[in-house]
Length: 282
Ligand SMILES: Cc1cc2nc3c(=O)[nH]c(=O)nc-3n(C[C@H](O)[C@H](O)[C@H](O)COP(=O)(O)OP(=O)(O)OC[C@H]3O[C@@H](n4cnc5c(N)ncnc54)[C@H](O)[C@@H]3O)c2cc1C
Ligand SMILES: *[C@@H]1O[C@H](CO)[C@@H](O)[C@H](O)[C@H]1NC(C)=O
Ligand SMILES: *[C@@H]1O[C@H](CO)[C@@H](O)[C@H](O)[C@H]1NC(C)=O
Ligand SMILES: *[C@@H]1O[C@H](CO)[C@@H](O)[C@H](O)[C@H]1NC(C)=O
Ligand SMILES: *[C@@H]1O[C@H](CO)[C@@H](O)[C@H](O)[C@H]1NC(C)=O
Ligand SMILES: *[C@@H]1O[C@H](CO)[C@@H](O)[C@H](O)[C@H]1NC(C)=O
Ligand SMILES: *[C@@H]1O[C@H](CO)[C@@H](O)[C@H](O)[C@H]1NC(C)=O
Image 1: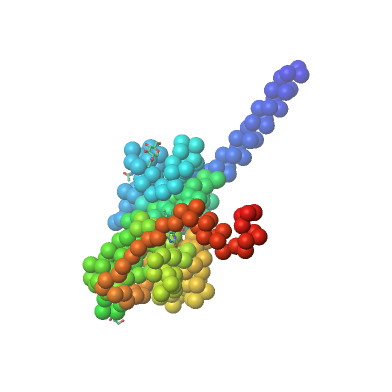
Image 2: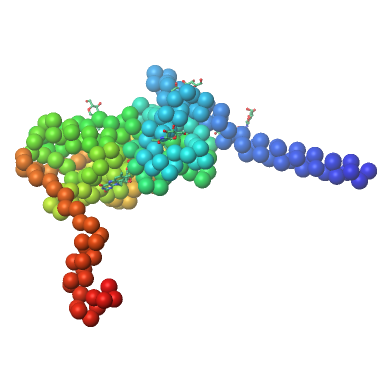
């Protein structure tokens, strides 16, 4: 008697537990999310062509291609349920809308250089919106401006400018593989900082898709949001599509050099500057 009552209680408890988790898991289920993406994208630009689930043979390669901190290239790192390598604006809009409906966290990745892997690592179930296909760089020397999409890397930006002019440049990072999306939204410093400031000091317009899927430019987003996405990081505010930059004038010949100092040499220099009474302690 006793054991059958225990059994009854346990099975009742299990049934309750299962139905509760079934009810809540319903809309956050993987299939539900995929269906949502399909139903929110245009048939002329099928979203299935840009979806990678762990079952797709290229899933691992796509995931790893923009993991720039190898600490997070481990089997123990939590993996995204899906990678969406957007080709069209409609794909991004579907990702935003369905992420909200299904409560699945969206990580936006451009160049993947986040030091902490924030663009592709999470503590909760998530998917990656990968922006590497959005990488056009349209340079206008006539207007000394360029529209740069977030999936371009800064090396591509420098290259496209240099193709058209050897007396123009743009102040941004030293490392050529850093992505425009994270770099420009976060600040951007490099060799030209002393003369021209940060990247964000030379950004004049932007395109962003907000939480409701609307495409906004500087005029329609307003100065507060524009200010936020030019230094405050992008992912708290929406998906940045592109930045319009102001090119800066540079001489046709530039000399770049690096002075290497060892720790020991620096220490000697430091000691010499100290009053005699301190030298022994240092
Ligand atoms: C090797 C290396 C060298 C570096 N050198 C420099 C340097 O010289 N100067 C310098 O200033 N910094 C440098 N950095 C730092 C780098 O600028 C930042 O880590 C920057 O955020 C990387 O941008 P990303 O697009 O490559 O990174 P990601 O990892 O793709 O993104 C970084 C962050 O921005 C968010 N984000 C990315 N794209 C978008 C988007 N389209 N819309 C909204 N949010 C978005 C991501 O979600 C994440 O939170 C370097 C980093 C590394 C790893
Ligand atoms: C949950 O999923 C089941 C099976 O797909 C479906 O019949 C039901 O309508 C869904 N409920 C909600 C609230 O979406
Ligand atoms: C469940 O998902 C469907 C399809 O994405 C959506 O239309 C519906 O509003 C969602 N239901 C709830 C309760 O969130
Ligand atoms: C991934 O696999 C699914 C199911 O087989 C398929 O529908 C989808 O097109 C594949 N994605 C890509 C990018 O090939
Ligand atoms: C990442 O890990 C995989 C094994 O899971 C390995 O094949 C690959 O070489 C690693 N990538 C790099 C750049 O080390
Ligand atoms: C330069 O700016 C003018 C005025 O805004 C515009 O009409 C023209 O198309 C721009 N040129 C290029 C190459 O973008
Ligand atoms: C750059 O030009 C191409 C071709 O005209 C266009 O498709 C693309 O949207 C432009 N990019 C930006 C960021 O304006």
